[in-house]
Amino acid sequence: MDIIDQKIVISDIELLNIYGGGESISATLLNAIIRGLNTLYELGRSLGSTIRRIREDKLCEIS
Image (cartoon, rainbow, N blue to C red):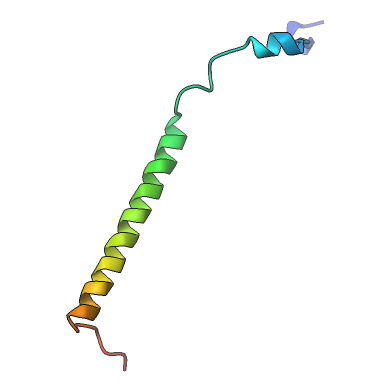
C-alpha cells in the first residue's frame, strides 16, 4: 500500500494544537478589501458630483 493511500487520524486535542496558515492576510482578501474601498470611493465621487450639479443647476436636459 502506498503512503498516499493511507489516512491520518488526528484527535481533537491534536487538532487544537495545530497553528499557522490562517493568521496572515491573504492576497485575495487584501484585493477584495481594496476593491470594496475603491467602489465606495467611486460611489462617493459620483454622489458628490450629482449633488454639486443639482446645486449649481447644471443638469443635462432629458429630451
